[in-house]
Image (cartoon, rainbow, N blue to C red; front, side):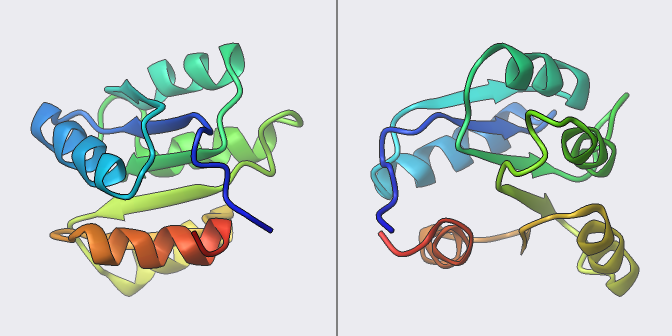
Length: 128
């Protein structure tokens, strides 16, 4: 299975600098169709309005957190199979377990680089 490098990717983070960093890393890896949302509810609206091949979301956001967004995505019949990668500054075991239970495909701990992102993307989407 080959990865569609033209697929739409939604990155969700309430911190503009982090959005820019993730967008730049994705661009380095060859993904150019990247949309942004600054919280879970905005992300959910975008996900319902457009087809995405991947969501990369921060965990800590207000008012809707990344884990709440993940649960909403998994509960939605149209979105439930959407690949979802969670980013967090904390690698607490209970967070990893909660994210796994909620149906996350993979998990990235900040700080990370393009190589880490590529590894995680490959494990979720297949090699590219």
